[in-house]
Length: 204
Image (cartoon, rainbow, N blue to C red; front, side, top):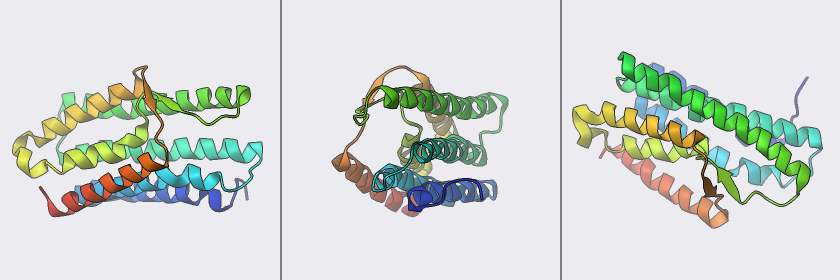
């Protein structure tokens, strides 16, 4: 069998499975379930790097891990939010432009990260301290947060979701630096995610 099979890739695979299931649920008219899947994918992605570093890997295994992580991220955080938006009502021509732009921006961001990360690893061994552009995984926090206000926003919610989708896509490809969160930052995001999950399930 081609590929690499060990525990370091399990969370990445689980993230992808959750993302695909979320796409199916959104396409079936279940946006709430799809948003929960988006959050699960974000949780898996947050810790897959930590798990990978617990095992000594070959260079090929490291490169494989980078590639599958980005491919999974494109599905989970580049495609799933778009399908959720379409399910919520983004079906006019101007909304469709945003739906096409968002995954394209995510694709560009992920490809650029792969190139820059490979170059960085060739010149130094220290851990990355900053990201360039908004990481696509932030979609796992941004869109569940917006979704919490679906009832308060009423008929305006589709427009709000579309504008956030557009702004997030732009932030993917704008050149600015954002600090990479450490363990405390990751635990903070997990806490925020738990709170958001409560409001997503409850409705605001």
